Length: 379
Image 1 (cartoon, rainbow, N blue to C red):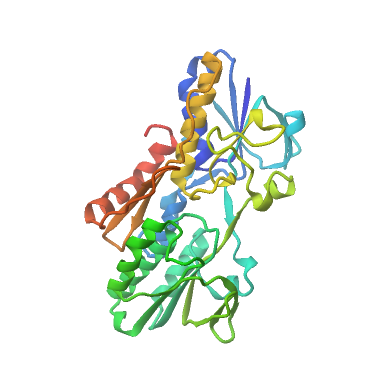
Image 2 (cartoon, rainbow, N blue to C red; image 1 turned 30 degrees about the horizontal axis):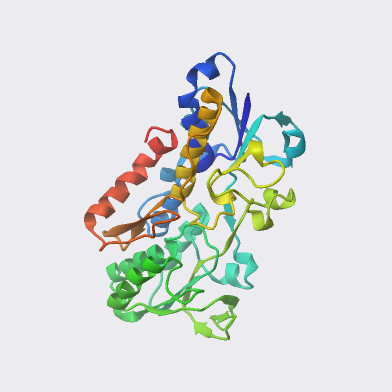
């Protein structure tokens, strides 16, 4: 049986490693072949870009060689897929090579798209890549005072980043002694400060306590760089001295170009994680690539990958899957430089954030290092 994993991010890596650990004998005797195709030889711990933006880690601390994270029985190639031929059970890569499969796992991730809002890319800072995070740190380090606007687009990658980045900037400015010279203004597209109701109920009083102003029902229409203003679809205008963006994002272009899903999100069964439609029986979709209406978070990909790997292993060993994905997500919420809380939820149970503590922050810092063991399938 040929199993093809498309994407070397968190979802694809955890799936491949968990599956390989469950099927060592089948791989050894050649009954199972696991092949991973990635667009890069590097694996990036993406949540770490926030810490780069705050000057607390350097980009190289967040990167490992993808091959070093994979079980020895997994065949790995840096050769991005350009064409999906699901009816014929094969893909064609950039090199021209064709890979056939019996089962394909698509976990290609997503990309920020600030260009979809006129003026946003040119006039704001964000922290979704190494270069952008370093630029963020430089601009924040030279900020002399004024109004910092945090403008959020939907949908955005990582559900907690709008809150985390706001709290982190507040502490950064406080440490620089500029709190009395700085005004913080946060905008959010819906009628509360976060998409998750209970998270919003927790966050709004935190904003109030810290003196962070906020405006909801503010959907970015365009950024007027000449006049340093963000304009909303609702007709509002917010002036800024430094504009921090949480830009909207989409799935990868290869998904759109192959007609697999609008905006790069593949229609996916929320419990089985199979692609919906005619060819879904042997297509699994993980992480940011799904259109499941839950948080686009690393933990989402993690839990989905574990369920998918367990089911594929069970299918091979006993002939049927054994689990359903229940929508489980776990997100740390950094509430500054030395406090954090978390949100844990699933399809049926909403999150209930607690008061931030230094202990949860310390655990988050530890997890930043433990992540590499998680990717290996060891945790």
